[in-house]
Length: 135
Image: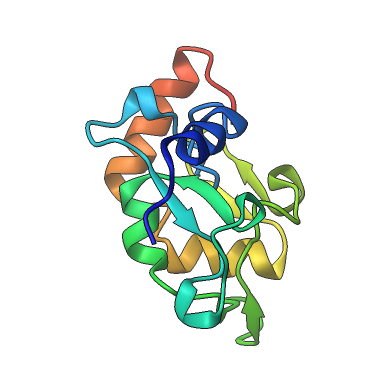
């Protein structure tokens, strides 16, 4: 099922043009951010706006249909961060050197699965931080 233009625009506005996982702004990306199903259709996730988020292409490709991953600190299987049900600031922080740190099990598992600290994204975050950007 294709999402309507109105739905896509609503999701983009609600996210204020930033990826709801890594928080990088659309303006810093060459490719357009995408609307992602937080819980994929194959897991019986709906097209309702409460199950949709704005996602950069990198996070979207890394996340795929996953809804859980392994916490690198405890090796426990934990749910991924859920942008509609959880607050970003309670699960993540951005350090001055540009890395995103997971501060909860869900945050750590999400950072690892989505490879949020690959070299290119860390360098981009450093540049954005120098220009006053805050997630």
